[in-house]
Structure formats: C-alpha cells, structure tokens
Image (cartoon, rainbow, N blue to C red; front, side):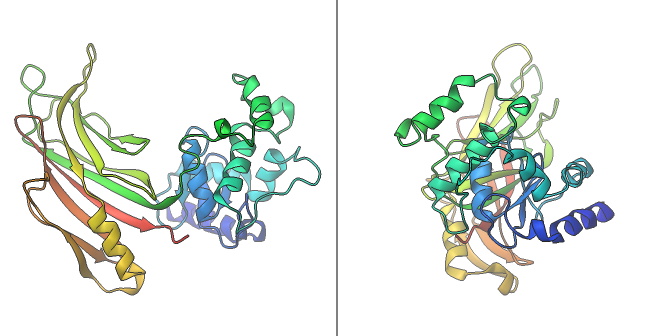
Length: 313
C-alpha cells in the first residue's frame, strides 16, 4: 500500500493539483476519490453534504486509502483532466468560486458541477432521472427552494468514530442477536456492518461524520438485524460532543501539543457514561474513548473512540 500511497502523493504534487479543483485555493489536502479531484477543506465540506453517492470525500493525509480508491484517482489523472470533463460546457464568462467565496456560492457551483452535471457534455450526463431538476434549479436559483436542506450547513469539523465493540448486549432472537451500530448526527447517519450471533461483538470500524456549527448530541443505537421483520432496537445512548469540541478549541492546534489530557466528560445520572471520559491529545490528535451503558434495554455496553478534526475556516 505504501507504494500506492506514494503514487497518490506524487499525483498531489503535480502543479495542477496544488490548487483546489473547485475554487483554486492553494494546497488542497482533501480529495473526492470517486470523482478524482483534489479539493480544499472548505469545498470538501460541500462535497460531503451532497452525499457519498456523488462524491466520496477523503483526506490525503489522514485517511487510509484502498488500492482501488488510489487507482481511480490515478486513472482520472488529476484536476485538469477532471475539469476538462466536468467543466467542458462552463458558460463563457461564468465565474467559478474563489478561495474566499461564501459557502452559498461554493455550494451552488459544486452542486451544479457534479450533482446536476450542468457543465458536462450533454451525452455524458447521467442525471437524466431528474431531467426537470436542472432547469428548475437554474430558474429559481435565487429562491429558497433550491437550497438543499443540508447543503447550506457550515461544518466546523469532522468526527471520526471508531466503534470498538459491545459487551453483554441484549438477546433479540432465540438465544442471541445480530447487532450493528447506527450513529446519527443532525441529518447524517452512518452504520457498522452486522455481526452475526454475537452478544459481545467486536467491530473496530471507523465511521465519519461532519459536525455542523449548530450540533446536538451524537446518537448511538444498537439494532438487531432481522431478515424478515423490522430490525429490533437493542438499546441506545447519546454522546455529548461539547466537552471534546470545546476543549479542542481552547487548546488550539493539537499538533503543537504534547500528549496531554485537555478535557473531561463526567459521568452523571443524566448521561449514559459508565465512567468519566477523558479528552486526550495523543500523537497530535484529539481523541476521546467513551463507554456507554445502553438505555431503554435490559443490558449492554458499547465502547467507541472518537477523534476530532477541527476545520479551521
């Protein structure tokens, strides 16, 4: 994989890829793995909001890339090649967003470029299942209805949640359960794979969520996968993100700090913690391990490790 990663880094070093494909901001460290472009942190938030079926956002420096993802980036060949396709029919005099553009302008352009594919050669467009949308989008671009619900949200950071495992989970089938975990934050959902017939599952799966400016608690649910009927709830809990995000904000750049504890979320009667949970800086990253006693169920605990990456916009 290291050889492959070197290929990706090499591609990133090409001069055309040293600026964001969408707004030309310098030194982009994010990419859309399925589109094949390198993008800046502000545009990555917009890409994330249009959904992974359109753009799969990854960090060049922080994420583990699969060989396939790297191959597809290399195959596209970088920003110039991709823009030659996605901006082939950019109207004359059209002004692309610039590094300081407002989120709204960025949002409108990225949606038009990739989701509605308005600037693509007509024969290549694959959004024909919504032919009316493109026209509608153009005619009411100033009215509120064209703003996608999640689209106008400004993200303040990315939360990486490693769902480690569960213990003594509740029985929902004859003698066991097929558990999986669903995380919900605002409009976003992410879930782990299903582990068959196990009340003490180990997932060790990483899920990624963008955190909006106005964020509430992270909701965690454990469900029993059922082939026939609706999946049964095996308990749920809420995680308060404030201790971690506030501590990180007050301590500044974690890469400049040694390994220290910067905050704490205290166990109380009002939360699901099994013990106090420390917010730590380890190896330049802000992390917090949390073990939760599942609510609304007869038994079970789940442990997750969260990592917070602030987008310093």
